[in-house]
Amino acid sequence: SGFVVEHQDSFKRVWSAECRLMLKAATVFLWMACVLAIGITAGMFWLFLQNNMEGEHRSASTHFAVCTLCGLIAPALYVLVAGGLSCNAPEDPPLPAEAFEDCIEAPPSLESP
Image (cartoon, one colour):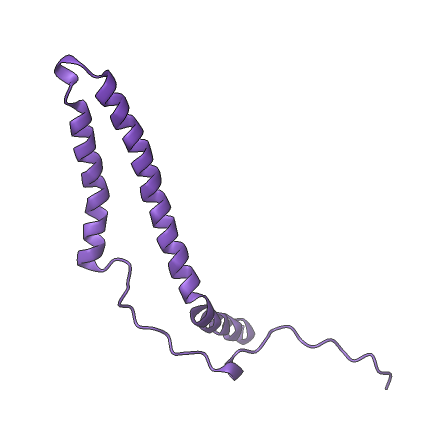
């Protein structure tokens, strides 16, 4: 069990040191894709409401747009106020070059004894 714990800790150090930037970039791109997908879908539905609702339902497109914008702005405000993306999280100390030990052992030599 000590072997597993040691290598899990080693993996965490390597992951933090080498993959932190890529992980943050992937997270930002994921959120951007979600917001863009919601925006495109909401825009098409708003356009449908704007073109097809008449009479007493004429303001449905305006209500939909306001609700959609509130739904997109509320999480952004929460992140800004509460720091939900942990942008100020403490960084792990840098990984020394000799700290990572590969768990794969070297193949036995082919020389005969």
